[in-house]
Image 1 (spheres, rainbow, N blue to C red):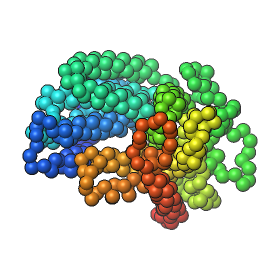
Image 2: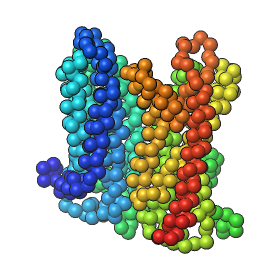
Image 3: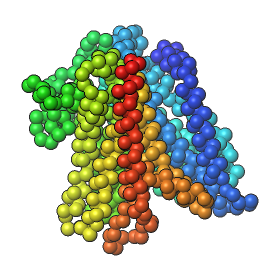
Image 4: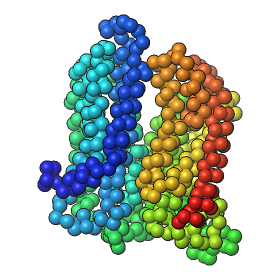
Length: 539
């Protein structure tokens, strides 16, 4: 009942196997890893297997890259396990079935992990090609896969645990990423720190990692089962009843008061008066009701988790090691990349899902009012939340630190931050106009942003490690114009008594600003065309 005859697992596997998405993902994943190994393959005719540094770097890059990819994909498979039932209005029927809560959670977890297990198993032939180069022992390969399987299983359980607390997949997905990404980075740091201690690393991997992952996963599994057994009040079609007053009274930790500063900056109170004649009804509806219609749990968790992680990063990068200030800016940008799309990726798809898009298009509201109302409402929430993390930068500029001599660079950081907030919101709104489901729109937004923002950084690291003298170096440098991270790291920062940093290129900063202007303007024109021409004629 729990595994071999689990109806939840059977249903999920059958529905997933009938979709072509899994086979396309498997082909793309294995092809990407194969091209990565092929591009980094040593060009020497003879390789000293006793001291093959490049081969060792290749093996480490393969495992770390696969580990990060698995960590990023785990929430996409598991974060909608329970919220998907709520969105499909089948949660009530699932709770009324004789299936035990433990079997439901285990079936959802297994169904989410099996596609990831397929990807890891299919990557084994590629890693076997790297073993003859030296630099890695078969036992280390087994240990790396063992640790990766345990970590990915824990990440899947974290995503399902988040899914049990929310009514929307988008909220569950962003909280899952906020919890999983720091844990994944800790795993990478531990693997790198124990690189020279072969036996100690094997002991940690075979003894400590599975115990920690199994213990934390068991606690989350038990709490998720308890959550299903004591489900909240359900209304029509299995939708959770949200009472903001009750939620505020029972809130643990952060409390959001929509009538006070600074909460009203991103969560204005509900309207109690008539709408002004010249006001935008779309913006008013989105910012006051639609974004917070499912409560403020996700918002409170996002603020608390981000602040908790930001405290040590801020103290070390801004005040202790001042030359590492770009790394704190990178953390702020990463936070916006994760949170920003959530408030815009469902702007239009939610109208489709509620079957209200036709009614909206038949009103007297112009396409421009629809666009800027939905864009500004999502941009306002995401930018204000991200601005909370930029206040330490303002404080650092006021304090008697060496940032006084780098005020143009600090202003550049704020400009990069503002442009990035606009770009993430615009990309999410554009994807929302193309797709029919909010979850699909959100995942497409994440994919585009990762390719534009993080792709050039990864390509630059790969080229500088394995192809330093190749002609592709110039192409990678030009591609870095699409990345705000590259723009932040290439702004000059002069700090005395600091170790020498890599050479910076101010052209990357200006190139990013120019690319962002063209990119956002093109998206705006495309959305205007979709609203005014295509939908008004065909829908």
